[in-house]
Length: 132
Image (cartoon, rainbow, N blue to C red; front, side, top):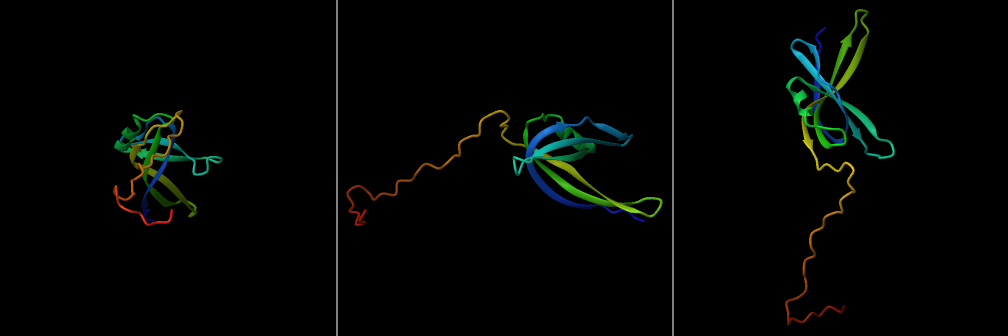
């Protein structure tokens, strides 16, 4: 039976929780894990494991725990049938780009930035007939 990979491009923002060591799986294949703390609900953060493969393992070299990042990844899934004919399904999140965001580890949240108010009053000397 032919195995097929299915892939979807996605992105997620989170905080680097852990960076695994590079693993040389075979002579021609290496991978490295990245764990991201994803806190859509800060009370219940999720810890999501991503894989960096081959030359993409270098993307993790300059990261450290606590860095805020946006991870671009492919969601991959594939079936595997064992010798008894039982099929299992596997998913993996494969990193293809990491963008560092403003590192806010340990820093207080920045105040929101707003545009300066615009002066919409009438020109000097003009009458304003509004009642207020």
